[in-house]
Every structure is written in C-alpha cells, then in structure tokens.
Amino acid sequence: MAMKHTQVLALSAAIAAVISTGAHADNHKVEIHADAGRTFFEDPLKDANTWGLGVGFYLNENWMLDLVASKYDTETQTGGIDVDGTQYRLDLLYHINTESAWRPYVAFGVGDQEREFNAANAWSERDTLLNLGAGVKRDLGNSWQFRTDVRAFNSLDNEYTDLAVTAGIAYVFGEKAAPAPAPAPVAAPVEVDSDGDGVFDSKDKCPGTPKTHKVDEVGCSLKLTETVAIQLKITFDTAKAIIKPEFQGEVAKLATFMNQYADTVVTVEGHTDSQGSDAYNQKLSQSRADSVKAALITSYGIGADRVKAVGYGEAKPVSDNTTAAGREQNRRVVGQVSTAVTKVETRN
Image 1: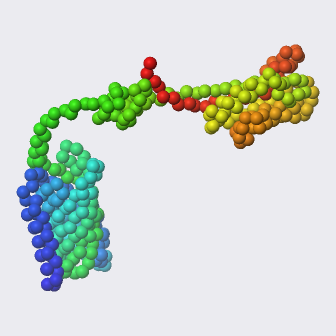
Image 2: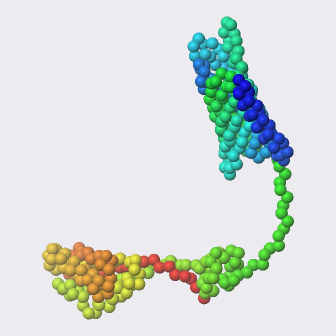
C-alpha cells in the first residue's frame, strides 16, 4: 500500500511541475467538454455506457490540465446487482503539434472512483486510479472541437485494469497570445542580371544563359518541340525488285534522316500491280520491301532492328490497274519516318 501511495505522490508531483512550468504562459485558454463512451471492465461487471464533463486549462501550447467527472451504471455479471460508478480525476494532456486540423495527444492522470452496490445489504468501494491513454482532437471552427480518446484505468487498491473509449465535443475560450511584433522593414536589395537574359539573378534558375536565347520567367532557355518527317516512294519495273538508279537518292535521303535521328524506326511497305497471281504478287512485294531494307542496312549502316519490311502484294493499290500509268504507280515501295525534335528558341 505504501508503494501505491508513493506512485500517486510521484504522479501528482510531476503534474505540479508541469503546472508550475506553464503558469506564466501567455496563452490562457479554457476548454469545457462533454463526453460519452463505453467502459470495458476487467472485474466481473457488465460493460457499461459512460458519460462525463470536464474543464481543461491550457498551460502552454502543448500542455493542458484537465479536471474530469464521469459516471456509469452497470451491474454484476453474477446476481445482477446494480452498480453506480462515479469518477473524479485530474489529467495532464500533451498535445502533439501538427499542420493538420487533427491534433493527437497523450494523457495520464490520477483520480478517485466510488462504486455503490445497490443490494439488500448495500455497500460501496473506493479506488485510487491511475490512467494512461491517447486521443485526437479535430478543430471544427468557431472555437468548437471534436475529441475522442482511449484510456486504461488501473486500480492501485484492487489490482484491476479497465478500458474506456469516449468521444465528445468541446468549446475553447479565453485570451489568445498577442501576435509577434512586425519585423522592421529591410531595404530591398539591388537587383542584378549577370547573364543579361532579362531575368534578375534572384529569380534566375539558369545562370549563364546565352544572350541569343529566348528565356522563360525563371531565366531558362525556351524550347520548341516540333515534328520532322521524311517519306520514301520508289517504283519498280514490272516483275522486278531491283531499285532503279534514279531512286537511289530516295534511299540515301531516308538513311541520312535515320542516321540523324537515332531513335527512329521505319517500316518499308512493298506493293505490286494486279498482274499475276495473288501468291506471286505477295512474294514479289516482299522482295521489293526486302531490297530497300537491304540497301539501308548494307549501304548506309542502318541497324537491322530499325528497319521492318512488309509485303502487301496487290491488296493496296493507289491507282487504276487498268492503265499502264496506274500499274506503274502501284509497283512501289513506300515508307514514312517522323520524330519529335526539341530546339532552343532564339531572339531575332
């Protein structure tokens, strides 16, 4: 028993020390709260609803001293004896600073509990309780707060521990700390534009930009992305897959473009006119596409993985196969390559 009283005295001394520390705080606020919840008993009592009232005194930004009175009605698990419980306690809450509207806290305290057993031979029990818990508050605006917490209550007299979960509403009033005095005005620094791009050094995130470049609001070069493309079109003699000399320049231009833009890939498509069988024309169109692919790889060093050759036979004519001119247009290999190019915009 002496050890229990020593623990109570130690806790009371700790609370008193915090009170004395915060007694000169500039922010004197008071919180009045009403709570309701549920108590879960370790003793052979039925779990019960509980309700209470409290008044809290803010000692400083983080610490609050809370005086709470609460009550519950229950009955014994055996015999059905009505039990009225009353608690009075003194708690100390430590609020954790956050930027959120939700503000968590931890709490500990000491109190007195009386239980009245309403039987024929009525009797009562008194306990000294230590409590420890955690909770959270939510600012609702206009000085109103929502609060909820969970507590463990340990009896120093009868060696049991109960658990309570509560939620409630609180109203906070009192003086707020005076705002800090405004700092003395500071003379504006002299602005400098070291690289002459029209943006002062204080805002320039890309120092040393060439004067010929157009820049954005933070001094970085403006870049313009545009699409560049090249088309290939080669025609062939009847029943042939050999690239005629006059079209070697077309292959060379495509190769030059692809060497300039290394991320490009091309699909060359082979086609025929309608003369001959479908099977023959399919094979001939593939040979024509393979001929262009081979020229790109062997003559101009384009990687084989960057060129795909597909034959379509006579399935995709672009002109009338009933005329010689139309058939010539259909005996072809075509392809197109495009890519996005980013260029720096320059001043006029």
